[in-house]
Image 1 (cartoon, rainbow, N blue to C red):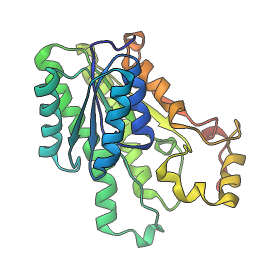
Image 2: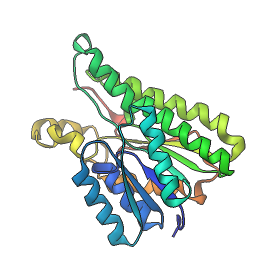
Image 3: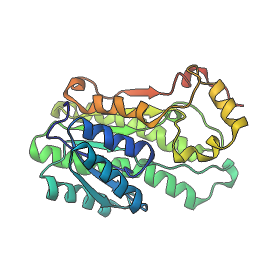
Length: 255
């Protein structure tokens, strides 16, 4: 197992891509810390799946828009397992609106969860890596929209563009410590965040016509590359974005 005896924090680990990440990292031998904000039942389901695989799991509730709660998440992990080896910044959300209708509250929500939380969760874990001389792994779940315009989702695109630059910058700043940081950028994935799309056959057809592989991705399509980047096999990879999008990025046309 690639991640035996490793400890991984997965933010937003209660459902969707996050749940798939927890399962895959557990299959590779990692102990899993499942962060959630509001869905305790889903977090418990993820914990049960991890334990059925044969690994250990800890659930930690934390609102990642608040730095003190991020620090609590990291400290709870250390208190339970003694260390952190892997951070997967997966938690994220989006709000659709015409640019002229975007509210300050929605802008703050998207940027706080998608960008601020990535910044300070990474900071908290890097402090631990430095204190323990641990060349750990950081993987951000970004989006094709760190690169691809997405009309009516400008705040979301801004947040993911910010994650891209955090990753590139920290790859340089942290490289001398052996710490790697990379992005995994999904395209259209069949998860609850795409509920409306999945229930709109006409719109779904338009989207899949833009995807050379002809289908939406599944959470498991994302989890494999994350497991690889968390492992020692990826120790010479940092500052990169890996698109998991069926070819969408290079074939996209706004409808």
